[in-house]
Length: 470
Length: 72
Image (tube, rainbow over all chains, first blue to last red; front, side, top):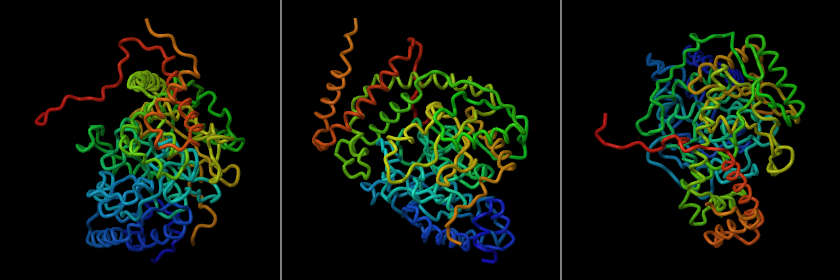
């Protein structure tokens, strides 16, 4: 490789693309470097389930030939990435992060993998995750086939979940980007805890075909990367209608950053967003607001008074207990790693059909109220979480981490609206904190524009963790 | 006329009994305390939903669409 490996770990997707096209690095160089980093740092952080070495090198060699001969598939051509191990990849196990499914495989790639393949991206790894994406009720970082996901910033801390490996691998600069999934916090949480930028798209924006179903009406796939700009490029490749997923939106989405505004945004600051926040989280958020005021107007607003968390809990529990009905009925949870995951799924039986339908009816109220609120602003602004990552060896069901999540997370996931989390500083134990922007349905462009403008004014997203491989 | 709501503990006991009847074989006795906490949390969520007023016209978002293989 003509450029130093550390240069590669700092580069954006567009910069890597320019290096590839100038011949300073090759797709094989990038794949080799990513595989080496994943094998060292990725495994140290429990971020890797499977390195897809053969597939990666085949795809990288193909990209090398294509780029040399003038075939250009776009910005992701030749760029290595990892995918959360709930995305099916033909020829490799798809474990869903859970010991009982360690030998599971599928004959075809998930749609998101197919789309990235078409865009020329190079899959190098299937990344660790909380077992069954956290749908069984985990309360400990040990809820994973590969061991507790660890933060690249402090390996005694949890990486967040359920897209643990996606957060750690991007945060440790092993890969430029990864695919994560979110049902309720699973992209935004590890993004904040690992110091990366994560975009949760509108429900239906990205096909779920070939991805593990936890909650059919709440699952979303999305990018986790080094910047908002990179997230936009990735979403461009993976978004769009898919006949194989009847819940995919019938809308084409193309990344057109040049058409967007760079200033003049109107933000809603949720009253109470800092309730219970750690001092450093609060201080970083206030500092972020000062940056945002440079190009946005900010006014206080209130979250609708509805049972957001209860609706999210009942919908996820109902749909997960149906999606995993046979597994639960046959005593499968006994093979899971986290103690609560071995017990909690049986409790789901107390939810009646009428309770589930009531949750769906209240959900509609939430969706309308959230849309009315979001329509007044370009985005709602909050900390992503009110604490830094908890220690990886303690339950987070008790203690100061119990209330780390904000009510907005439940409301937004129930409503299916998009959000982006960007790094905005550091707190206790050297761990990163996050700034979250939540927008109206289909407004990913607006969220990306606000986040890009924030990242032009700050350098938090460019920081590299100490101790990663040279 | 609807039936009176039983006292909270009786409702919790009944829910626990139902879960244990269905899945008790998969659960060690030591799990019962934690299971009870989890059932209690779910019942609290259900109560939160029941305390949200709804009218007859408040329908869930449709999750079923009529199917015809040759539809355009």
